[in-house]
Image (tube, rainbow, N blue to C red; front, side, top):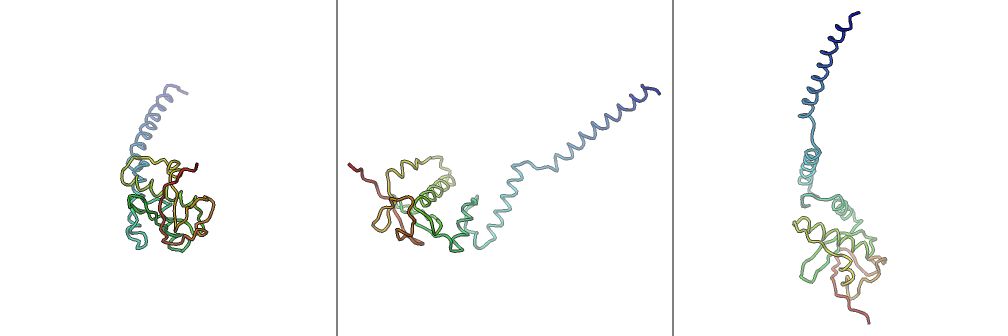
Amino acid sequence: MDFNSSAASTQPDEAKVDNLSTDQSEDSKPGTMLHQEALALVENGITEIIKSDPLLQYLPLGVTLDELNSLLALEHGRAMTVIVHRADNQKYSVVVEQKATVIDLKKAIQRHVTLKLKREGCERTISWRYTWKTYWLYYDGQKLTDNDKPLKDYGIRNNSELSFVKRLKNK
C-alpha cells in the first residue's frame, strides 16, 4: 500500500469539498433572504390585504395588532368608542371593551396618544404619571376618580364624550 498515492488522492477530494462548500454558500446567498427583507415582504403583503378589505381599508399604514383587535371587537359589539376632548380642542377616539374600567380607559388613551405621536414622527415623551396626577377624566358632571370602577357605572356608553379637567389641590 502506497501512502503517498492515497494522500495525494485525498487532497483533491478535500479541495473538491472546499469548492463545493464555497459553491453552496455562493448559491445559497441569492436564494436566502435577510430578516429585514422578509419583514418588508410580509408588511407589504399585510398592507395589500388591509387596503383590499372594506372593513380595514381606512386603517393607517403600520397598523398594530392591538388596533386590529380593537376594531374587530368594535365590529362584533364587544367594544365601544369613547371620545376624549383635550383642552386645545383636539379629540381622541379611543376604543375600549364594554366591561372596561377607568384604568383600562387610561391605558387605552396612553396607547392611542403614544402611537399617534410616533406616527407623526414626534419624539416627545409624555409623563403619564404627571398627567393622571394633574388631571381628572370628566364625564357628565362627575370625575372618574375610582380606577377600578367600570365605565358603565359612570354611565359611559358608546360614543360618550369625556374631557380632562384640572385637579384642584386639597388643603
